Image (cartoon, rainbow, N blue to C red; front, top):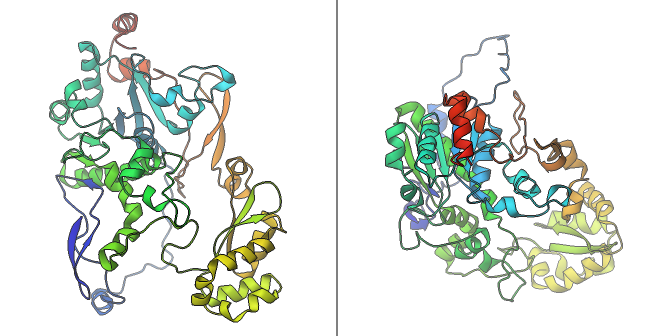
Amino acid sequence: MVELEHAELGRVTTLGPPFKLPACPGGPVTAAPLLGEHHDEILAAAAPRATTPNAATPSASGRLPLEGLRVANFGWVWAGPVTGQTLAFLGADVIKVESHTRIDLTRTLPPFAAGEASPDRSLSNHACWAGNGSVTLDLKQERGLELARELVATCDVVIENFGPGVMQRLGLGYDELKRVREDVILFSMPAAGQYGPLKDVRTYGMSLSSLTGLDSLNGYADGPPVPMENAFCDPMNGILGAYAILTALAWRRSSGEGQHVDYSQQEAAMQLVGPAYMDFELNGRVAGPLGNRHPTAAAAPHGVFPCSGEDRWIAIAVSNDLEWRALTGAMDDPGWAAEERYESSSGRLEDIDRLHEQLGAWTAGFGDRELVERLQAAGVAATPVLNVGDLLTDPHWKARETFIEVTHPLGFNETIYGSYVKMSSSQVVVKPGPAMGQDNHRVFVDTLGMDEAEYSRLVEEKVIY
């Protein structure tokens, strides 16, 4: 939390940055501006730009922005993999460091390709580890640890999401890594950061959402909190973690300095409760579960409503009187919608339960897709509530290649996520999560220069394992 001076509110407390960069501390230093506060200042400073008529458009190189960058990824489960995955989508060579002595949890998760349980056949692993390569090292053996350090010497970035102190105990702490690569960036993303009373707390993605206040907002109106059923904090932290690494890389490009990035998954997930936090800070209100109602009572109707078919639903949000009139027009102006109480937003909010009940009785007579088209055409914010099975056939996701079919190195086909990074001048190639050790020969022989005899011996001795 940081305190800032606001032009009208005085001293206000707001959320600070979710990661700490010791070499280049950042975060908010000024409060949110008043509307148009800097209008005159910016216009006065804006100089006319010189233009070159008919200037030729530079040709696109087709290169991905992080090509040539190498990353050693000691991360595991989901947050660490997605951090590496995002950098790989941007062109980095990301190499997961793992071992058969401690199988990554995601490699144990079903479903498995062809129903055969194996660390190399988990479809969950292939989706969340897409873009990462893999080398296998037993870090409990001294030679395995030496090889890990030799790999780091060729890398720009090291990722880890263990608890604080684990990398030091392995012999791979920041001081040790700096000895082999002075400008290395070590990105650490424990649950609650590298210091503080909670630094040793053990969490997974779902317990993290409880710790940050998210679960206290989720549930039926006036009921107890209902925790989220998935570890959504993990992939969110992976993507935001990649942004933290890009920030450190930008600093290194200008200064030549690496650094140890202290990224708190808890503080990053807390950004999602920012509006509720500011409501408490400024108004003293403690938010709680509201079901599908708008969190600041800024829309009515606002919820999900039944459609024809089994378990089919539509989401509808109306934020002003103009949108309300558009909705009633799309409903062919039923008599109940013309009641005086519904003419204003305040009246609709006051009678929202009855409003939702009558609206739901109308939506139940339509298919979700059919009704969405009708309401969108009228100017109403409405979407189908897609289930997981709908996603693969949805025309929008198909057009954007949100899900793609790939061939795993072991030879079977599978469907995984496509790249969420889209660029106009270069194409992302998405490879499924790796087979264990698939890059051992490339890394240890081709990159580190190990001779074939030693490589074979270390494989036999289960150092490379």
